[in-house]
Amino acid sequence: MKRSLLLLPAGLVLTIFLVVPYLDIGFISLHPSSATAPYAPGFTLRNYRDVLTNDYLLHQIAVTLWIGFCTTSATLPLGYIVAWSLTHASGRARAIQQAMVISPLLVGIVVRSYGWTILLGNNGVLNRATRSLGLTKSVIPLMYNEFGIIVALTHIFLPFMIIPIADTLRTADPALVLAARSLGASRVSVFRRVILPLSGPGVQSGCILVFILSVSSYVTPMLIGGMRVKTLPMTVVNTLLDAFLWPAGAAQALILSACAIAILVIFLKLWPMKWNRL
Image (cartoon, rainbow, N blue to C red):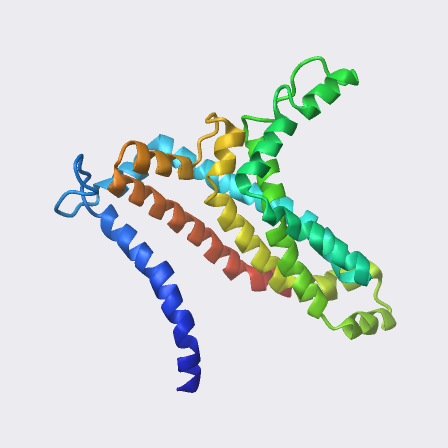
């Protein structure tokens, strides 16, 4: 009973700020659209049918999920290397590295995205540098494509991969590593069979955070993609604000959420099997 009471505040917060909004969005998505109100009377599944039978929207869902997968795959090795360095750094060096990891979070996503437009643009720093060095004579397409979006999202969401992994590495018992080494295990074997499984919860948390944030990102794909790469969050915003079709936009958002949740469920189901084989 006492444990239930302790969980009650967290349950209320989740219910108010997560469950209720999702129920509201689901309720709106089941209504017809209206030109004079958020939704018209009656119930219908047409909004979901329109999304699932629209090849253009299905392509956007695939692009959005692909960008999320690539961003997560890129941040994982980079985040693990930085987290490893954080864990094994001395007091002052660790404080400096932690400040460097956290400091980008103090800058807005819009500012950071605009910074990448300066670097990746057709007349940006990288293109001008390659032309001035004679490495290329034409413009390298670093922006207005999926590559530029993935690069920018990797930079923006990298701290969300570093912090969980660093926490799990910091709490791992160093005696296990010493025991493995004393039994004759190589450094590679120790990392593969001891350190990597111990850091599994942090890797899992980081992957989930980065994937969800990447899939739901709106500002960075819009600025870096230049409207040439359309992701579903961009279409959802346009449907809600420009076309004022709340039921259609709600259905699009829920279908994207369902796809992301399905991928995460598969990921969580496969995770123990993968780590048990190490």
